[in-house]
Image (cartoon, rainbow, N blue to C red; front, side, top):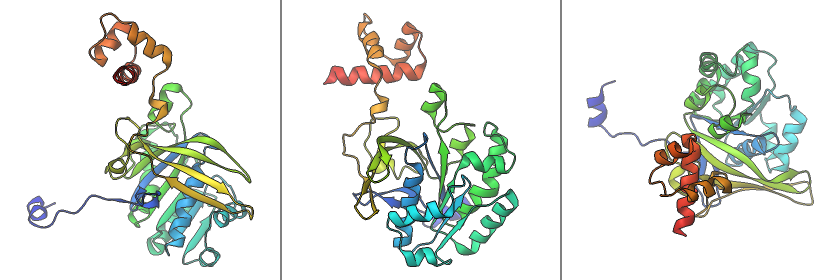
Length: 311
């Protein structure tokens, strides 16, 4: 690339999040990028992604749902309708497409078709089923990267906000890092990686809510309008309110300026151990060495202890 020519011209602005708007007008996912939406089962991941699809259809955009989890067309369309998707858009194949590919060849053809369809939002449910479709191992960085190059990256190049759903790791240490499997998943995110944690369980006829926190934001456009102070700041709270006519009203409530990620507070026992050190530790490394803890555990305990001391 001719950097001199680039500098002589007008430097392009970094990508901005434009899909799935919060109540303050700021969005939390990026078009033209791969975005990861991950969490435990029944945490609301699919609802979050379908809400983004409905938003795009209401805004005259185009959407595809690639259903690898075999939720089925009836269930998917029912959810879209309940969230407010226009029936005219769902009927129109130039606006909405649903596919349940049976093998990798069919999926690759779907990806090829998207070059002409140019979706605003592409939902992939889920990464856990995508990799086995190619005979790939979730723990292999090379195999994930190969699938990413064949499916996720080409979809993003169509201009779509690719919303890839994934599951949370099982081990306690791994869960703090993000989705299960290889760390290459996180490195490959070109947009935002959002952790979804249920707040009020989602119940048919009643709704529910989930907190969305920023696990990674490559371009910083979501963090810019989110609270500071946490490693994984709150991006918003996704809520579903059930109405009497089987309709669901969704919102992504913007966080307050001082809203904190409650999961980042250290356990009371850890804070007590920090407070009991005499003399008090001056740095995280000092606390880690004196207590023989992992650095992330010491950092969390020190941060919580300092905040409580300051208050």
